[in-house]
Structure formats: structure tokens, C-alpha cells
Amino acid sequence: MTSKSGILGADRVCKSTGRIEEIDVLKGVAILFVCMIHAQPLSGTLVFELVVNRAVPIFLVLFGFTSVLWWERNSHRGWGATSILWLRSRLVRLMVPVWAAMMIFWCLQVASRNPFPLENPGAVALSFLGYMPLVGTGWFVTLILEFVALFPILMGLRRLIGAVALMLVGAAVTTLCTAHPLEIVDAVRMLLRDSAPVDVFFYYWVFAPAVLWHVAGGMLLAGLGVPWRSTTTSLAVAGAYVVGLLVYLTASDPSALRNGSTNFLDLPLTLLCLAAIAGFMRGAGPITSRLRWCGLHSWGMYLGQLLVHNLISMSRLSRWADEYGAFWTRWVMFAALAGGAVVAVKIAESVRERSGLARVEARLRGT
Image 1 (cartoon, one colour):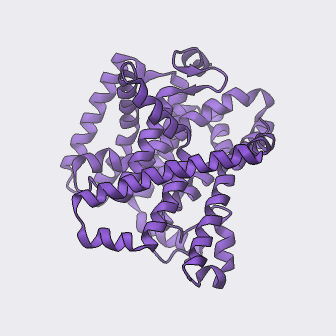
Image 2 (spheres, rainbow, N blue to C red):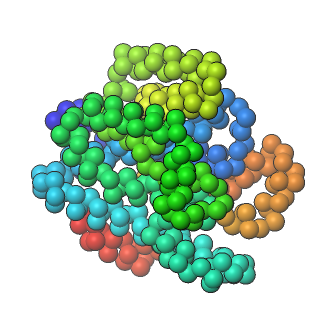
């Protein structure tokens, strides 16, 4: 298998888990980008539009990549047994933090005398299952859980038609979705019974086929070893990115071509970020170790910043930031989101270890 020889035998790889350091660091960078998206200190700049605002697509590419590596390490069991282990291990790993976050979120709502939780117990219950249209940026949680459920099918298709064909199918599906966003919103809105009144584009954001290209692209990359460590490959990817960037910047139809070209910039952008990190890691150990920690805890940090973001929105701090609207207040907001997320993870890790929950989770995951 190409991925085993190209990845598991490479430097900067944990052989017992198959984790690749550059990927962990990039996840750390991406979760900080998420905090920047919500605080918007760089809003309106080209860096924000082309790099920072692509944090979620980068996460999806890395999801496809790392999920294939996990599957290959466990595929000796057969597709059925591997699928069961996959679903069990991923859901335990993802849902336990979600349950903790939702308990805190709804307690805060009750404490603030918001009548919604008591008047809508069904919506509260659904949030514990991962469907949370009224919980800030909880749409990403829903989207990831969809891909967790779909991934055994995607692996079956990858084996049946090949990774390249699967990526082409993903590209076609994503392009079709990009061309018809309002139709998708209407269809999903009807399916979900108009349960997300805050922002109708929630229905598009949770529609997994709209970003199938990203996950399928990551699945293809997983079979190529670590291509970002090759200078030739990195230069070729940089060239492709520049061409795509020119198309994006010069397109005349922002509602179709520009949005579509942004999707197709995400795969080379992810590779370029990994190449840059691979070079940066040679002389910046302390920084990359901290970013890697953020990457290893990116799911917890996402939920942590979600809670902090909602807490700020409920408090006077949100009105203060809106009133002053100064550049520096946005950086304060970013620091609050990132710092709050780190504190939340530290507290959660301490509780897990002291309560023995970590051992229970390991047994439930089958690890």
C-alpha cells in the first residue's frame, strides 16, 4: 500500500498511531483561523478571504486524509467489522465532548432566563445528537457527524472505482451544489421542517455533498504518501494554485464561478500549507509544538470556542465590541475565543483523567 510505505515509514510520524506532525500542526493553525473567522480581526482583507476563511475546507481535506490512514490501519478486520469499529470509535470520541458542551450551553441558557430550553425540549434533545441549528456555529458538528456516518460508504466506493474517480465524482457533485445553492436550501429546509430560523444558509452548510470534493480529495492524497515534502510537487501545486487564484480574482460572476473556483483552490491550499509547515518545523520547535497541541485538541477547541462565543454573545461584551467596533477589539475577541478554548480543553482533560472517563472512553472505542 502506497500510504503505508510513504507515510508510516517517514520522519516526523508517530508509528503507533500513524499521526503526521505537519497535519497536526495545520489543524492547530486551522482552529485558530476558526477563532479569527468568528472574531474577524482580518475581515475584508485578501488574506482573510483566501486563507483564514478556508479553515473549514482545510479541516475537511484533512478529515479525508487522516480517516483513510485510520481505515488502512484497521482494515485487516474486513469492511463490515472495520465499519463498526470506525463508527463506534469516532462517535465516542466526538460525541462525549459534544454532550459536555451541550450540558454547559443549555445550563447557561436557563441561567440567563431564556425560556427556549424549557419550552422546546425536543430541540434540546436533538442538540445532544449533534443537530444544533440554534447553537452558534454548531452546523460544523452536524456536518462532521454526517461524514463520519458516510465514510464507510466512501471507502467502499474508493475501493470499487478508485480514489481518482471518487475525487472526480466529488468535484462534479460539489460543482453542481455550488450552482444551485438556493434549491438545496429549499429542499433541506423542507426536509428538516424549517428548524433553523436564524440563518437559512444553515441548510446548505450541513449538506454534506456540497463539500464532498474536499473529503474525496483528502482521501486521494492519503494514497500518495507525503507529497508536500517533495520540492517538485510543492512547486507544481503552487503553480496550480496561482492559476486557480487568477481565475478566482478575475471571474465576472461572483455567484457561480468565483465560489466554485474557491472550492477547487482548497486542495492545493492545504498542500501548500503542509509544505510551508514542513519547512517551518525545522527551526521553530516551541511554536510548532504549541500549534500541534491545538491540532491534537482541535475538536475540543472548536466546542470550547463555540461556548465562549455564545457566552460573549449573551453578555455585555458583545454589545461593547459592536459599539466600539475598533480593530483592537476584534483582536481582543480573538484572544478570548482562542484562550477560552484552550482553558476549556485543559479543564475537560483534567476532569477526564481524574474521573476515569478517559479509560471508559478507550474501552468504548475498542482501543
